Length: 91
Image 1 (spheres, rainbow, N blue to C red):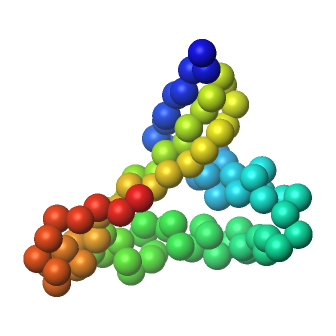
Image 2 (image 1 turned 180 degrees about the vertical axis):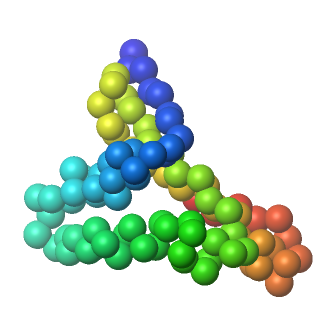
């Protein structure tokens, strides 16, 4: 049985793995248009993206038998929850 290990993105090297993972999946898809890496970095920059003034996010990488196999983000948008009067999280 395959072993799955999920790790939190904790440094720039892991962040680049997170950003570049779609290339592994979609590179042979003729309909896929890859995003600009610099745009993905700006989107995920917690210090400079104003979204993170009212939201929290944690990024994760999943490894299957030691090989990167997936990624995920867990997000809490406090403005959304306040406006909708709920306690929703996003993945």
